[in-house]
Length: 230
Image 1 (spheres, rainbow, N blue to C red):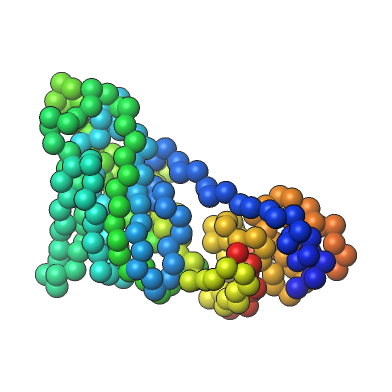
Image 2: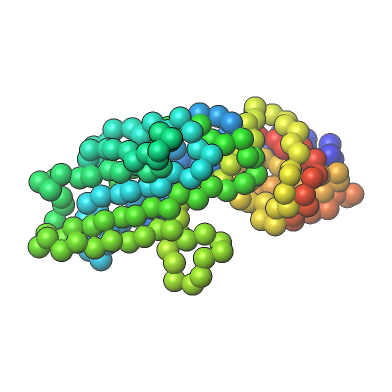
């Protein structure tokens, strides 16, 4: 890695802000850390066609273990299990008397679980949102889309899995090709592969482009080694 860019990066004190959650039902707590038990928060950005959210059912994908949903002011929580006793879905249900007159609420629903040991991959949590209007009308939105879904399918909440890391420099092996580096390195200060570098911070990238002997890192092939600073 180039010492000039490293020195400039350290001197600027550049800080990165976490991404802002979208208005859909999405993972609002940032990336998951491989082979680590952590709390994952799902943000419910809006209701359905002006109606308040009445219930949310989140499917738990295979490989996610030690699932423990957290109680919420939103409503009562329950789980669904398969024959082996594995949690396959978590459901939050709001009491009728606590329904809002319209779509004015933002809700956070949390689940604690062990993230699979699959760094540099993405897990999708198909989610089903039920809303209830003040006149009793029920409507449902299914957030189940993945990159292979057809057009018109609402996107499922996605958890990007990154390796466990420490502050400072970390060396990682990337098992699969990555075309969009911001997906897994969005909170990094800088990523190095040989003499090529990437940063989600525009100011840092300007330093990279202006430094002799350094090229811009735009993608990663499978089975390559990178150095990442957090």
